[in-house]
Every structure is written in structure tokens, then in C-alpha cells.
Length: 321
Ligand SMILES: Nc1ncnc2c1ncn2[C@@H]1O[C@H](COP(=O)(O)OP(=O)(O)O)[C@@H](O)[C@H]1O
Ligand SMILES: [Mg+2]
Image 1: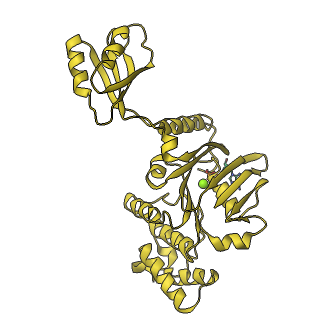
Image 2: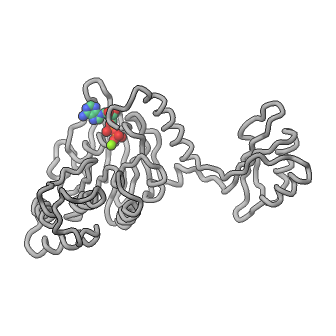
């Protein structure tokens, strides 16, 4: 449905996106994940035909976003990073205006606008001036205008940014409900948000593709295990833990410093819980448990690493945020 080939965007000597190639299938809810400055907004502005790429091309439903912008705009609902709303218009009036632009007329238009206001829970604010709305309500108006006309593709740039927790849950639920009906690509710099809403993700950093795939692929198909940090004789600890019932495999994730505790990653059988056995073993052997934690998903580790690297390079200040 969405296809990007070697997309590159330069602003003067800043390369915002650098040879991005990816695709999103029909009906998918795809997260476009990356830290601030990764190039998410730039990519989305190209995909929606608001700015041309420096190199490469993109198509939506087979139409080139650059050479066929009208066909593309007919099929795409776009929630930009900052929604240019008409502050002197009332909510219902504005949505009626957007619906007219999208070619809706008469009864159909009136019904569509009413439906959208119900879905986005704007009915009680339909007569408010947009300029007087809170950030959360403005974001809903932004989403409502993107949804009007039932576009087959939705491109949402950080749809939950700046919202309070209750509003975030509302908007996430609303987007999840679109699954299978519409193709959605939504950007976020928050991994748990993407894990919650999306079936697939594309991860970018500094304008380049880092990873893409289903959430399961990206998370790695790890068993449910835990990490134990144990002070004891390094040679004995691992083999003793491995013999416990329910333990599949033990790997040393950090070599012990001389005399220091040893960190073990313990994979366990589905449904097993060898933690009690482990405690008995420790008491029995007089070894000390320094720490016991769950295994973090590979995706979380990879994303954290990526953000930390980015932060380090950013000490001279991010010009935008
Ligand atoms: N209009 C612009 N002029 C110059 N640089 C820009 C402009 N827009 C974005 N950039 C730069 O391009 C990079 C990517 O920005 P952006 O696409 O907004 O990333 P994101 O949405 O992931 O935060 C950043 O380094 C940003 O400062
Ligand atoms: Mg952005």
C-alpha cells in the first residue's frame, strides 16, 4: 500500500533522511519509531506529498506521491505534527469545511461529520471555537479531519504527543479500532506505544533504517525467563542453576569480575517457575542473590541503545526540541 524507495531528504547540508526503503501492507498498523530528529516528520511530509524528496520515490496505492499528488491526497488522511487548524472556526463548522474539500455533499456530508465527531468524541465540543480548545481536543479535531472521507491510508505524525494519560488511551484505542479497515502508519518516539498499538514497526535513526518487521520478529522469539545475579563460585553457579527443574538453558551475560557476582540469563520452560527452586539452591549452597529481574525484550534493548547513542551525539543541543 505504501512504498518508499531510497528516500533521501536534505535541508541545505543537513541530511534528514538518508536512503530509506520500506513498505507497509494494506490493513497494517505500522509504527514509525525513532528518537527526536530521526527523520519521521520529514518522511511523512514526503509520503503525503507536502514536500518533494531530494532523491528516491514513494507511492501510495500505486500512485507516485510526487507526480500524482492529487490522487494521493484523495486516498490519504494526514495528521501533521502541528495541525494547522482554523482557530476562529467552530469544530463542526471546520469539519464540515474539510468534508466539502474532500468532496462530500449534502446529507452524506452531514452524516459523515456527525459520525466522525462521535467517533473522536467531539460532539460536546462541536460548537466551541477551535482556538479555545485544549491540546487534547485540538488533537482530536486533527484526527477527525484526517479520518473524514474514509481514506484508505492514514498517516499520523505523533498522534498522542502532548496529551494527558486519559486522552492518550482514548486515541490509542481509536487507532487500534482501525486495524484491518485502513492502512495506518503512525510515528512515535515511544516504544511501548508502538508495541501497544502496532502490528509492525519500522525503526529509524539519523535518517536511516535500523530495523523493520512484525512486533514479534523485532522482539525476538525469546522464552519467558529471568536474569539472576548471584554471588558464588563462578564455575559452580551456572551448572547448578541449569540442573533446576523447568530451566531450559543458562547463559552467562556478564563475566564476573574476580570475586564479584555472576549474571545469568535463565531461559525457562513454558509455564515453569523455577524461582523457588532457585531460592532453595541458594540457601543450600550459601550463595547470595544480588538481583533477580525479568528479561527485557531485545527490541527494548536495541531501541534504548539507539536512543542513548543519539543522546550522546546531541550534547550540543537539538535545534528543534
Ligand atoms: N525545515 C527544516 N530545515 C532544516 N532542517 C530540518 C528541517 N526540518 C527538519 N530538519 C532536521 O532534519 C532532521 C529530521 O527532522 P524530523 O524529520 O523533524 O525528525 P523527527 O520527526 O523524527 O523528530 C533533524 O535533524 C531536523 O533538525
Ligand atoms: Mg517529528
